[in-house]
Image: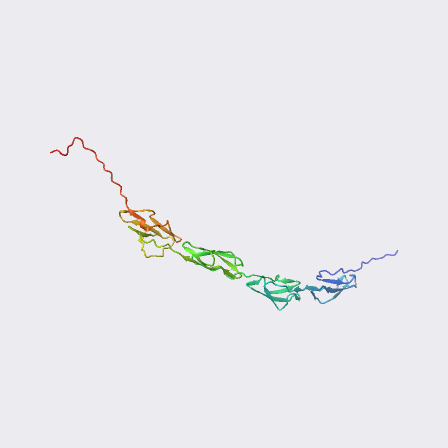
Amino acid sequence: MVCFVYKAEIDCGWPKNFWNGYVLGEKTTLGSTLFFSCVVRTTFDGSYFETKCVSPGQWSNPPPTCWGQCSIPNIEFADINGYPVGTWINHGKTFEYTCKNGLVPVHSSIVTCYNGTFNPGPPKCVPAPCPSPPPYVENGIRLFIGQEHGRRARYICNNGFRLSGMTQSSPYLICDKGQWKGGNPACQEFYCPNPGTITNGKIYKKEPNNIRFNFPRYITTIKHGQRLEFKCDPGYQISGASGATCINGQWIPPLGDAASHCKPQQYLPIPLRWTPIPNRNFYET
């Protein structure tokens, strides 16, 4: 009786993890040779152009790496340094671009070709953010979120102050390509007009603790929140409000004609009451 022992043929299989290239050859069995080649617009990176299937079923050399090239793009609003648009550069090469008209690179001005793509990202010019917060104002507050292009900052003044210095009738500054635009905001204090004098009466400045002071006619800086009290001379009485408060540059309630605050007091006739005395003659002699 004759016995036959079957021995499987050694096969290395096709090489794996070989991108951007192709393999030349037909067989992958023991003793077969394959050749590596990269596609167009790639760069060959390896020590061997060929590999051979050896025992026990392995390839003698690893496949190379075919790194993709990059084409220099046309970047809107930018100047590219050193390369014309459309030039192909190899993997690992860099180029630099400069943005114009208040724009900045979205990532970095130096871009590296990495296997057919750009690192850290596609080159692009975007409006520059504002490098610092919007200007601070005294006697007021500023409200803003972020300093990116297009962000707005709103200004609100404290009571007794009004916003000034804006180029338009708007309380906002806008970040426009790296600059806060819209004016030079400031909160300017404003005052109520001096009430003058009251005919047949006096004006007093009333403090929070109810202490009163004579109010001089020459004072022109009457601030928000200050209160006045009117007192008439004897024989005269108040006509209208007995005082007023300065609220954001206006007297509340309105003063009107100061001369009409004190008018002659109106006296009512005193009623006479009498009772006749009966049976009494005052003309007796």
